[in-house]
Amino acid sequence: MSYHIQLRPGSQTFTADDDHTLLDAALAAGLALPYGCRTGVCGACKGKVVQGRVELGAYGEHALPATERDDGHALLCCARARSDLVLEISAPAQIADKPARKLPCRVSRLERLAEDVMRVDLQLPADESFTFRAGQYVDIVLEDGQRRSFSIANAPCEQGHLELHIRRIPGGRFTGHVFDGMRVRDILRIEGPHGGFYLHEDSERPVVMIGGGTGFAPLKGIVEHAIHIGFRPPITLYWGARTPAGLYLHETAQSWQSMLPGFRYIPVVSDARPEDGWTQRRGLVHEAVLADFADLSRYEVYACGSPPMIETVRDSFMRERNLAAKAFHADAFTFAAVPSA
Image 1: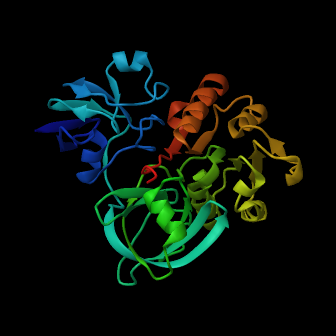
Image 2 (image 1 turned 180 degrees about the vertical axis):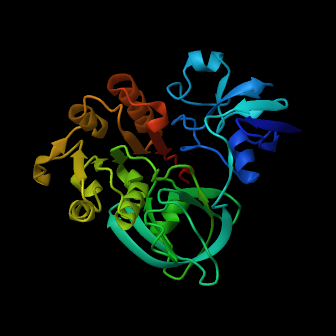
């Protein structure tokens, strides 16, 4: 069954089937709504149900506290319509300026950045225009229609190709193929760009970025875009990994400190061994931020990593460091795996 959805403020409307989330239905209708992780963790897509009924779906309690849920709020990336709706969102919906497209791409480069991280460069068709915002992601569409989502790790100014950082997941159908079977010149089919995780260029607030593992990928694209446009607010990037080897582009991140005024890079390792010779910050990456900042009320925070990491960062930064909800931008990684034979 399909339902009629009206958005406030503004007068945008769209139709949502009962088996699609409200966010997916809005995006399919070409509307640009605020969203981030699409997994019910970051809270960026929160809206209030003014009229009608929804099924809330599965979500992180930190992203939708019980008090807000009881007041009629829902996360649009999880909720499904169960009647016609009137929704109140944080800002008027816009027509998407970079609508998603499906394109074939050719694998132009494979580079192992770490034991379990592969850089995959995709060459876009020369006769097609593909535009995106730094920090967004693409879906790789498999032969059976299943999808795997990966952040774009290069800046939009690098036209003609996409850089992806793909971590090998035990039992992962696609990531296993990337490491064991993929070859240069293979053809992949992508759809994108997707995501509301990107640099808010009109903000003058200083920025704190925090990435875990391959959560570095979209932050890399954002920083390189900031360098390209001469972004003026200071940026502090915290990149966390279990071992120094997990900071697979450590020298690249260090080099940005001489390329972008006000940029600082702080690597953090949680499980360094004596033989690693690690002499810099240790512990959990979000704890390093808490140790360095007594107040985040004047900052914009960009966080990318696993859903548990995003929940922890969001909760601790807002509760303990006064970070405003609207200043928290997040992208949470989820993984698809198949059982071992």
